[in-house]
Image (cartoon, rainbow, N blue to C red):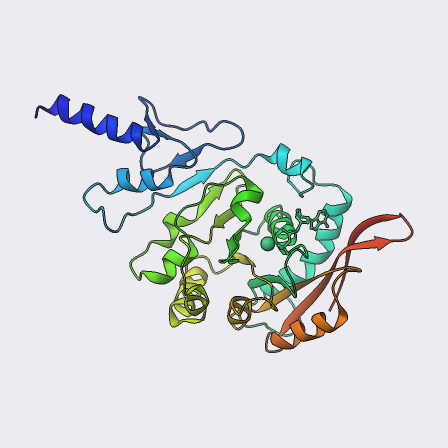
Length: 308
Ligand SMILES: Nc1ncnc2c1ncn2[C@@H]1O[C@H](COP(=O)(O)OP(=O)(O)O)[C@@H](O)[C@H]1O
Ligand SMILES: [Mg+2]
């Protein structure tokens, strides 16, 4: 087969895989969803075709594809419309509430609190039950911290059974946390997705795994967290996690964390459930309770309360 025939065949394979070959680097992501493959600049990639990026990046290694480092343009307008804090709208009631929530967390993470906190920059957002606002809070917290002048953030989707960061932020799914836990040679930097918010990087939960809870509890998790902290010691890592009373994953995860943000849906979560869930994370040195959707009688609206 001639070189041209081979090239034509390869192009056809790429098209079938959802990759549109392009004559120019895909540098200008269009608003709301183009995935840029930094190490594969000659292709424009359909957001859902991360696997295809992998096969282009390492054509000689089909079994263990290396996912190219990617960047993703978050649709900040949509996120703001959906009620999230974004850098474009730095002043809003929600932004002010998260400003209050993040201050002590940042102080603990950066060692500026009275007592030094081990792993203070590892912060897990959890709750007793599903639907209490963990993902909402984790995303807003990550956004809010990323708006600091000198603070970088990694948002990790650790709700491995029901990951919702991709849907919430419009991200494609791909390799992530669970893949990193399964392979020592996995290059974490290549799975971390950079965004158009310069200081915000995201790690998705990765390929679903039947024994996800065991992976989160394994030595591999210790190694991964050490690796994350060694690469960027000053970075704050926010873990969007599963609920504490439904699965065991969140409890496993909690054992590694320096700080836990415990979300309680106001006027909905049973006091007994809150107590039971808090008992499961007793070992974590710092717990902040965030009352989500608390009715503030003065304004008649909804908002956050917080406390320790
Ligand atoms: N304070 C809030 N204001 C507005 N919407 C909220 C708030 N908290 C949660 N939600 C919405 O409620 C739903 C459930 O929240 P989510 O964060 O997904 O819960 P969890 O992650 O705990 O299961 C989502 O649609 C989310 O956007
Ligand atoms: Mg969630």
